[in-house]
Length: 373
Image (tube, rainbow, N blue to C red):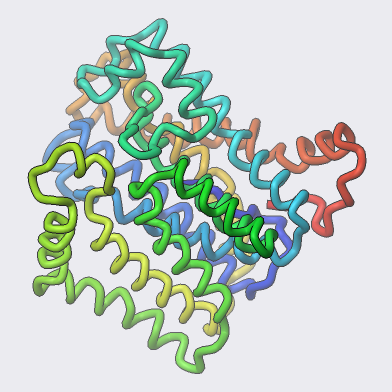
């Protein structure tokens, strides 16, 4: 979606309806958390209102990584290597490619909508920006290349490399597995690899799902323990250790490592325990809740990638002051409506796109779940 990119609502389920509905709700709420954080962080909307919005967004992305590890591990149980690769390629590019084209057009026709230096490279080197992000090399080693006005795209290269690592370990064997992993590690660099434990935490939660007889206790206690730990010094201690391991003031070496990665590990671990506990809960949701959760989750990837370009664009064209309540009243519904339209044209069409690719490839076995991820 990563947002993060996860199996969709029609995937053959290896988890209960309860767990599926709950995690779909979390996908949408996590994407919403990223949206609200950017309203606050980029000074869109009045301070008295955005002061209630999330003050940081990185933890939401870590939650997406955990969810991705959980769902993709489930997906791999159902598919051959060819099916897995086709699913992931289509799932990623069906939204990422339109977004890259859209942001490239914005950088050419409306470069003034961003007033920060964050997207300077995208404006000065549009072709390099497009292709580095198209092939997900934009975060390797020292690189930090963002599409124009779309900062959230940074997490997609992380996600894609995690797919490569997971697929190499799952589908390859013998010396081929280790050669593939070595090549992937060399291309990815430490910045991406140091957040891989967050993704693995989700995979572990799936592998050992249902093993708890006290699901409610684990699901409730895990976030409480995390919040209490952060409140009473764990967050500061992890940040200090992070700074120490990042070679303190050496800017060259710091660029190789992700900021806050130790804190990310704690967040990922607690959330993985939370969803591991949820997998053992037997409480059913009403049918209408499950249907709406499916629909909302189906637009979370589009919402994650599109909200920032739309936010900057609306900030430039809406007559109201972007720090006003009127702007929020206009911008928030417009972002959700625009993201929904994008999801209808992209995410909702992935089943048809897969079938067309199978016809072209002419030889890939029929998927056991025709709509797939």
